[in-house]
Length: 386
Image (cartoon, rainbow, N blue to C red; front, side, top):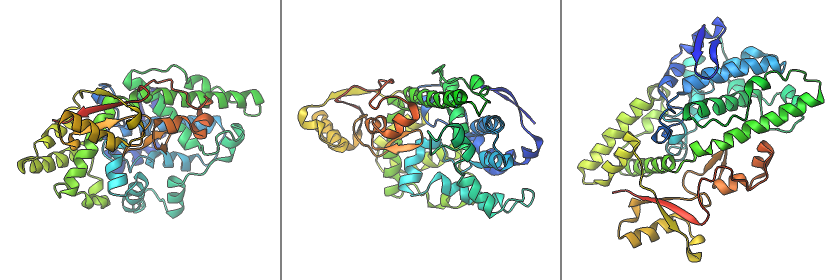
């Protein structure tokens, strides 16, 4: 079973896994963008969770052989099924599902597994397989090779992060040229201290590469569109225009890809527009068209530096003479409703992330390192929804 992959070239999968790739929970991933609203800026970043699943699993197969890790079948099945609970538009809709609906990717993954995977007698999976797939262990061999430097890292996460770095940089055009997977695969003398140290250095280079991709993940336009999405869906749900509870049902969630979700959102927004909420139309257009956002800078005075983003938005609105709901502001130093995600860990804001011991351990960089220079200090960026 062969795939022609944009990142790795020809991928030759063992035929025994063909059946997995044809399951509805996996084919759904063909229409879920890995980077959500990122094409608003990086127009080529339209790759899917299905592509990532294929790539991650191919990397994993290589790592299992390289690190001499047994039980390969369990790891490969875990990789193939690890993305099935992904929300429409991936992490761009995390707020809606994770915070508003109090549901996680893991919850949906387990629901789809219980309803579509375990019941499939062709696969022969059971409860113990379920536990391994959704709670993969920290492998002792990997910890031995990396000298315990990355205690939270298992082989599946490493494979996923390698594919994230290579695939996202390829499709966005933001090549970091720092982590070299072809060289990494040659490090097979696992009894050598030099080899072990080189593997640790390479893994840190991997996370420096991922950190440099904050120029993609943390782009201001992308962040504004995500926040516009949050404001719009929050309003539509609170005012009963958008009903999402039915999608807690796995039989409905499995239908919910990017296109289906946008159709639901559009119908809900049109009802609100008919009820004389014209600004809803503007928000919907930003999300549907991924159009450019007019971004303004607001320098913070000493009095405003200590204020929350919500308070600053109200201050800006009063100066502009508009409703504060029309103002959306972002800052790397202040917490907003989305939090900040770095290497899968959540922080209050960008500054908290790069000042953490977690960041220092994963990258080897000093805390406070800002190689991406996303935003200026003591400046809030804002846009006005008309």
